[in-house]
Structure formats: C-alpha cells, structure tokens
Image (cartoon, rainbow, N blue to C red; front, side, top):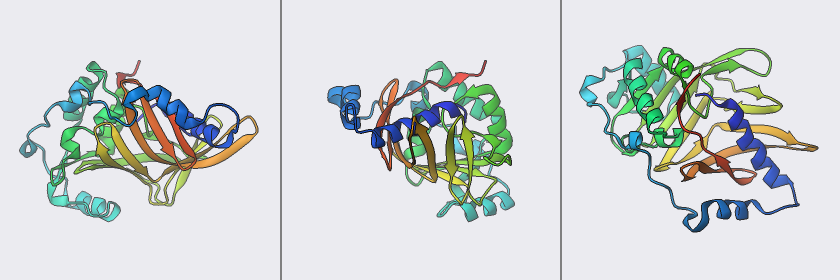
Length: 251
C-alpha cells in the first residue's frame, strides 16, 4: 500500500542478479541469508495469528459491487464476500504495527489461507484512509502513470487462499519509481496466491530497470518470508534476497 521505493529495489536487484556475470551467484546469496533454514517459512507474527472478527458482523457489499467484482475476479464466491469497514481494518493494521508484522504476515494470515472460508472486501475509500495512516510495503493505493494519468486502487479482496488488488485502469499501465518502471497487467489486477504463512505467488506485476549500462525487464513471480527481516523475491530473471520492513504508522 506504500513503500513504492522498496518495490523498485526488488526488481532492480533481481535484474542485476540475472544480467551480471561477476560476483556471487544469486542462489548462494539466498542460501547465506537463509542459512540452514533455507526454504522454511517462519511463523507469522502475533497479529496475523489473531482470529478474524465474527463473519456475521460484517455486511455484504451491495449487488452492483458484487457483480462488478465477479466480472474482474475469476471464480469469486460472492455469497461469502463481506465488506470491511475502516474501523475494523484500522484495528487489524494497528495490531500488526504493534506486533511489528510485515505485509507478508498480513496477507497470508491463517483466516485468509483457509479454503472455503469468507473473503473480505475493502473499497477504495477504506484503502485511501489506510494508505494515509500506515506505511505498508507493496503496491501503491494511488499515483500517476508513466504518461501522467492518475490511477487508483479501487478494490482489495482477500481470503480463500488469495488476495486481489484491482485498479481503475484496466487497459494495462505502468508508473515510474525513480528511474525504474513498474507495470500492472492489462486487466488492472494483481493477484497473490497464498502458498503458506509468509509465502505467495504473484501474477499481473512486472517491471523494468537499469544498473549502470545493464537494463532489463522481469515478472515478479513469488515472495517468501525467510526470516523476520528478509524475504526471497523470485522473478523471471532470477531470485534475490530483500529486506522486509514492519508495518508502521506514517509520520
């Protein structure tokens, strides 16, 4: 929801690992970072383990919203979709910030991983308010495209093993983070498929960047938490270890 600069770093370092022939191979860097526990996923933080609020206390979105979401998210079970208010989302992020959880903990919490369970919907007004209050690494809630057109994350739907981020621009778009370009799919949708605690595959997200005279583009494919402060980011150009920052209040 914030932290756009760190996202660019993931892409650039992954490209660097793929195109540079000198230096230690990326896989050795990963093994050194993860040590003997390479491939193991640390347990989620305390806030991510907390039980979800009773489902019956969440209202259902209106019929028009349900129809629109069903058109954009293949296989969405609209009968089990519930609307999350700012107050409830704020309480969840507040606990996560206090527990020093990361966004990998937040988006792979046990109640979001379970199949056949509820899915939770956050509309853009809630996302905008959360984005102003909290720094959460990952995708931006709003911004400007490479050619100066505004974009907005309109919906976030999480649960039943996946997380979907839906933007208002559905023809595909890109935006700049410093000298690097981040691309969102033509559907205007980025999806996380939860593989386990602190681990999800990614679709609909890619980027391009340069280091010195070395340039290239890569698709982001997977993010896996390897320690309390690190994650493995896999791309079409190869893997790389990156820092994980906790969720925190904006200053």
